[in-house]
Image (cartoon, rainbow over all chains, first blue to last red):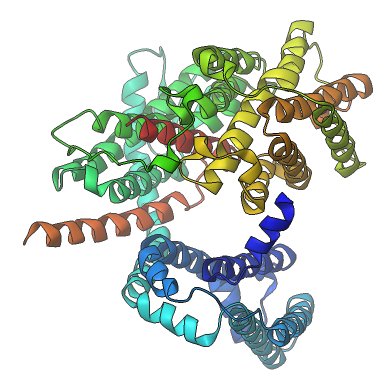
Amino acid sequence: MVARQGLVKVLSPRPWFRLFSFAGLVAVELALLSIRFDAADLTAGYLPRLVNQWGAVSLRFGIAAAALILLLGRNALETALASQKRLPPISVPLVIGHALLLLLSWLLAVRVFGHTLAASRADWLAGAWILTGVLAMICAGLAFLPATVWLRLFSACRDVLVFAIAAALAGTWVGGFARNLWRPLSTLTFFVVGSLLKPWIAGLAIDPSHLTLGARGFDVQIADECSGLEGIGLVLAFSSTWLWFSRREYRFPRALLLLPVGVVVIWVMNAARIAALFALGYAGAPGIALGGFHSQAGWISFILIATVCVAGSSRVPWLRREKPRREVPLHETPPATVAGANFTAVYLLPFLAILAAAMLSKAASAKFEWFYPLRPLAALAALACYRKQYRQMNWRVSWLGAAAGAVVFALWIALEPAAAHGTAPSHVPAAWIAARVFAAAITVPVAEELAFRGFLLRRLAREVFEAVEPRSAGLLAVVLSSLVFGLFHGDRWLAGSLAGLVYAGVYCRRGSIGDAALAHGLTNAFLAVYVLSTGNWQLW
Amino acid sequence: MNQEGLMKVAGFGLLLLGVAGAAFGAAGTPEIDASSGISALTLLSGVLLVIKSRR
């Protein structure tokens, strides 16, 4: 019943659903195109070389512009679409036209990318390929929304469109220009790292001509890419976006001070990160220094700075205005059972604790994650914080949850490539394996079900998620939350998404977070037994 | 310039800076490990959601 209602929603004639369905279709088709074909293969002819040179940049520009239009033009789009309550049915002839043109475009792409062609012939074929592709998109656009609605949307978002194109062009240009700053910044970073290390490291060899530091056989070169520019970019992107969305809560222009402060702090932390990396290697742990620490420390610095920037600035009256309290409509009032708590924290904290512990544990590891037990410990600590609220939730379990767990396990094994068969790391202590199994079967399922089903699924249905009855969340929320869950499983995204769908189905069917956690826990427990009995560590 | 005009200029500048920052960040340097990106950004988003909902 839930599924049928949801399906009607997805295919409904409401303009927003049509717009997103069209955007989703285009995104999937472009993704397939970019996976199958490599622009680097285009070397013959003027037009193919143009695609080779500008294809990736244009795609980045298109994504940036589309994201900006959706972000900034949302109100204008909503106003333009508000008058269009219902639309005519999706045009079947145009959908067929889209499919045929897409097929033709694909066949042409196979020719353009797959053969050594004469330059003039390559130009003609590439021209036909691009033209059929554009016509296929136009067909799809007109199939989902009539031309009058598109014109109304363009007219409503004219200003945003101009800004989005200008900003996306500026962003694309800055991305290329940024490379010119690598060298001077990495030289500066080299001198700061040298100054930080000199008082502590005896016999530190400093070579400014190659930007290398060395002592006791451990050498580090500050390459151009270690300039700190990427961190600066992330901080600028994050803090300016944060200030934009919270602009009514901050006092301007003084709040803009957060930008240079963030830039300076992240750059100094990058230098400190490299100094710490060197110190680790010098102290006898080069594997950790160049392994986990190198890959995680940048993110840890960025997350710390972003969190301090947001949480810290909210406590400084000089920067912030008083935010007017939002009146919550009576029908959105959350149930009284867990009142008084920060609902978002109740549902998200265990999962966030696992993520944070994983980052720290990986940062302290070389190849094998010896500190894995930190993860279940962090989850248990977070669960203990809100134990009163968890006691009031629905933890009833049933045979449905158990059966779902077994089905997902079978599905997971079936979707695993036959060739994948990792080997067991040597000398793994029994305590480590016990912690791994405990986490897989208990803490991870509980934390992930609270986050993905208890929070995300219901949050996608309505802003006041705690008031959403799981049975009424709708198919769209079930599908989207399952896809996000799947994406967290990397290469196994398909198996992850299907597993998410099953767990979400169990949750929506009985409204019990306990049932979903039981299903998830059983899947993971079966997988743990499978890994330990077959030695297929690839699954862990 | 009045308050509203100032806000518009500041907003435009912020957005431009955000896009430029993202482009900086996408320059393909290894100091921020891409394979850890999803977990790190999820952690940050979750922390921000928790902070926001506290207010």
